[in-house]
Length: 196
Image (cartoon, rainbow, N blue to C red; front, side, top):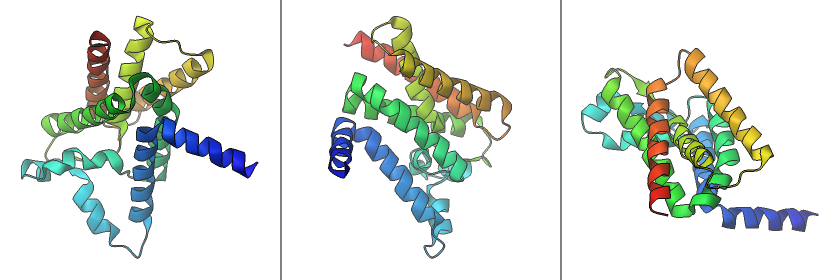
């Protein structure tokens, strides 16, 4: 039984390398930033998105916030969303287009946050990238280019519903990043289909 599970896990990693890499980075950074004996506050301050510091030249902060989270609930929901959606979308796009979609959506979300929100605004999390995945997938479903099982449709609709609810009703949600990520995903999906 252990051998069968081990084989299945190896196949999953080989089949969805980008999804697994994102989850691994999330997990490693969350563990490191949670350890009291590591100077995690200093590391966190150098990775988190702070609009003021970005304006002063810390351009890496447009990328690094995609991989760190504010608390366990934030980490768990974002990582679970990637575990659920990632394999499905990576299998449709292939690993390099999937990686490009994820990074562009996250960068768009963080860039929009920098442009439209105050210099004092601080942000972290992969929700811009996740909304990009949702946007791309919604376009694919609407264009009926790919078959999606009823079970996967229900799961994705659930993620979309929860994400939309949190975006609308939670006051600490970065709506700007969500919106920019979603539209970037829709645009990428359209370009991917056009060049298919």
